[in-house]
Structures are given as C-alpha cells and as structure tokens.
Image 1 (cartoon, rainbow, N blue to C red):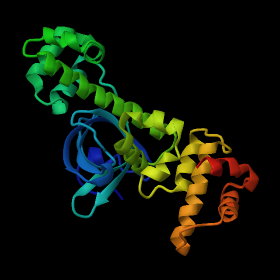
Image 2 (image 1 turned 90 degrees about the vertical axis):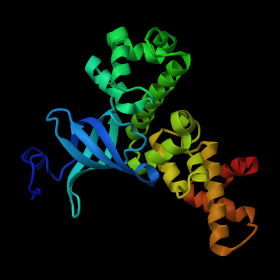
Image 3 (image 1 turned 120 degrees about the vertical axis):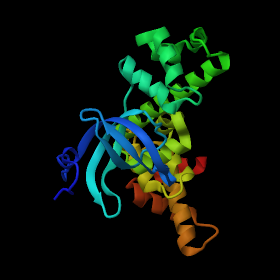
Image 4 (image 1 turned 180 degrees about the horizontal axis):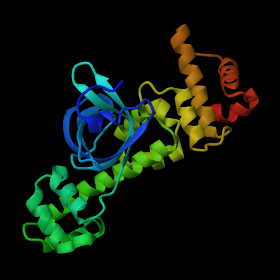
Length: 274
C-alpha cells in the first residue's frame, strides 16, 4: 500500500520499475561509490520528491531520466530508489538557462546564464562545446571563465555518454559508477580494449565479473587478454588459499583450463607472454 501524503506522489507507487523525467534540484548527501540522496523535480507534475541511489557526479539542475521504484523509508517517508540513470541533454532555451544557472559551473548564476542565452539563444550549448572562445562576447566572461564553462559542460556531457555506454551493456549501477570513478570519460575506450583490467585495478572485481563485462562487450572467448587474466586469477587464488609462493606450471594451466573450458595447451602461449 502506498504511504499516505501527497496524492500525486502516491499515485506513482508501484512494485514495477518506473521512469521519471525531470531534474536534480538539490544534493543533500553524497556517500561512497557514487551513492547520493537529493531532491528531484518531476517535469510532468513539477512535484519535488526525495531520491536516493547511484546519482554519482550529477550536478544540481542536471536534466535526467531516473529508473527505479518508490519506497517508504521508515524515518524519512516516501523516496524514489534509483536503480539507473540516463543523463539528458538540456533542450530549449529555458532548460539550458536553468541548467547553466543551477551552479553546474562555479561563478555562473541565473543572471550570467541569462546573458549567455540572450547572446546565443538556441545555439548556446553548441557554442559552449565547440566554440568556447565566443563566450567572451558576453559581458562578464573572459578567456579563463570561458574555458571553465567549456570544461564544466564538457565533463557533464562526457558523464552522460559514459553512463549511456555502461548501462547500455547491462552493467549494474554500482559497478558502472565505480568504473566511471576509476576511468572517467576514458572508460569506453579502455574497456573495449581490455575489460579484464577491471579485475586488476578495481578492488572486489574478480575475473568472473570482469569476464561477464567482456562477454557483454563482445570480447572473443579465446582472446589472449582473457586467457592471461584467467591464468593470473587462478594463480592468485591458489596462492591465497594454500599459501604457496610458487606453483607448478602444469597446475596453473590445468586450473585455468577448467575455468575457461579450453584445452591447457591452448593456454601455453598466453602463459609464456606473462
């Protein structure tokens, strides 16, 4: 049963995943791993609701689509539990005005955002992203400020593209945020090149999880990177379990062969290359 309170919010309660479009108005708390709690305004109803989940590095005023379910918090009441997000590009002059004036760029408030919009209109984001030197045409913006605006907006748009890439391959919000924190906008390129680096560079992400990511990215099961990652995994696992400081080559090959369901002799070149 939905909690009592605002009927417009109550009507949204459902056990199935829901989608909300709007903008993040306030961040109240940021925790580890991209977790955050904040206030979200639903575009359709203008209703302000509490949201929590992997909100990551989203800026206040950022237009997004949130996916998740409404839940009743025992202390704070109804909240939207976010399972994944899609960052949207601001569309229309008013949306861009609110976006720029929200504090996403340090030193830009509603007044300066208004002057930028008055100067460039519908081309504002195009100018910021691709011709930031033109921002100096606006009163109060010098070369340094123009570059700061460009970098801040570029970072947010890059965040959007990276999250779309990661969620597009079915990665969990928690893992997607950890990947984003570790690699930033280089994440798509690095993972396409070698997703098994996750097992080496992210604490708690072992071979099996990295292998799931690799499969979703279409990495060939017989590629050398996969075989080497499996060899390293079985070696470190055995050392941790049995306390050995050295292992027989045949043991490593046999364990990796079982893990990958591939012949041991096929793994020998990968072992030699380590």
